[in-house]
Image 1 (cartoon, one colour):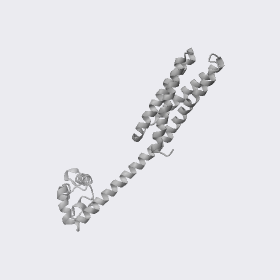
Image 2 (cartoon, helix red, strand yellow):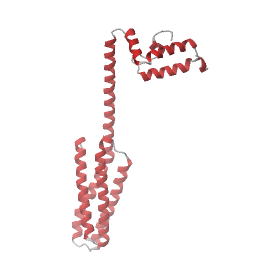
Image 3 (cartoon, one colour):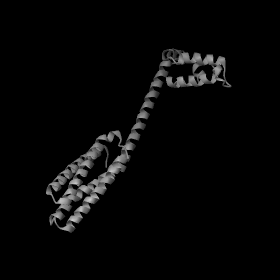
Length: 232
């Protein structure tokens, strides 16, 4: 620490940021200040540290100092800009890779399991209604239909649990919102089907069918949006 080079005194490189210079100054001032009770306390050294920071802590004075200190200073500035640009590029790439990883994870652990569950619910309704149409008042046929409704309720609860268990990446906010509406419509549809199985009122059956049709359209919209960002 005997060099009069301000960068050497503050123990930083010539490419250090203003924040790094400030942190270095505080660290050294604490170490060498005569009142610090530190074994390295040194009045002369703190004078050098203060003088170095007065220059390097001021961006304009630092630039003038660098012009005197560094040969071919314009070339040095270009190198610094290039290094900063490269650092910015690498940071952006790293952030993008993290974002892609989070998207892939959400699609794999949230979207795909939910898609399988609600597709199973929606795809079986017409078959169940066709079977029940043979005789809606047949106890065995109605029991099969009620079992389908119960299974659908179970699948829906599982899908909702998966959906709420992991936050969606910001880039998938639209997909998550559509999926949320889809789940809600399925829930409303299941309630209508349950009412129908209790009182044989066809209006509940028709309403349930319509809610499932809306859910199916929402699910197709989700598929379309996912396909636009991923080759799944």
